Image (tube, rainbow, N blue to C red; front, side, top):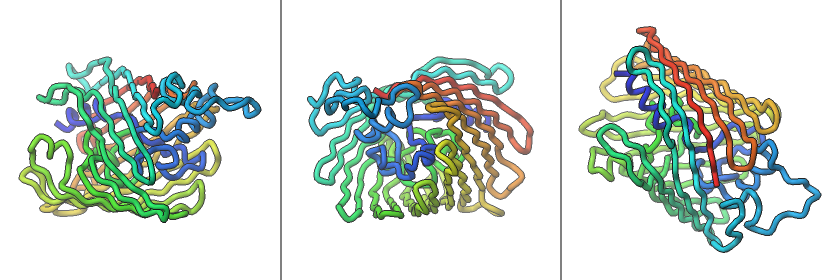
Length: 376
């Protein structure tokens, strides 16, 4: 049963569109440096779009001596600048991710498949400190639920000149490191996998060297939409930036009980450092608590080390371990190796390999994932 659940996690969650903490090496330790969402992922701001061309792509960088393109007309703009400024203050994007997945879990369950991991349209309007944001796209069939069109993130936010922010709607609450890989054990097993956003109100304060985010709401958005059991949920995250390439984040999570799950929560600490402009190292440790469980909590330890071999080509090494509730000898060990190439502005090729081993039984399974990510 555990192996089947892991396959589902990899199938629908692995490397979904999100933030990239590895860019700490480029001196970007806040998600809002490039994204509209305060918790990262989704639509890029105009600055984020231009950064992807000038700093990330292998061949897209413009000659500093060349005259800049007209506003909205550059290669990094929506539809490669075909619309110019016709949309006015509205920023839009299309996120496509055709993928090939090869699963080897032993026996007849091993298989391969080709599918669209994401096919989303995203839009945002920002004016006078207010931001309206929405994503809509194809949601794959999961269990008995058929595939369809779905809005999985939508919210309205405001940030004052003094750094005080408010946000209400459906979004991922702030917790730990927002890795692009939603299947990471620090995300999926703590309840931050794909389509697991909350409906919540978030209050934040942004300073020159700190970011505080606190959210509270009725719980999982999907459960609320479908009339399933859901629970009051609150999270908190405090980040302190020691410098442009070093950050520390402390997080907490509490979920009330439902008819299906007992009261539970988590606390964690994450530390990121970029010794050079080509190397980023993030480490996160979490302890997850559940009412009615005796013995120690479940622990998650994750490290993601990213190295830029040459401009636009990143190699990632991400060992992970998760223990069981009440038994630190149980759980799962994962080794994740990844190569991520950004050959041109707003498209990249990703190859990921996952090796998972159940610590008690010794059973293993492997996953190989190929993706072409087009952000138009």
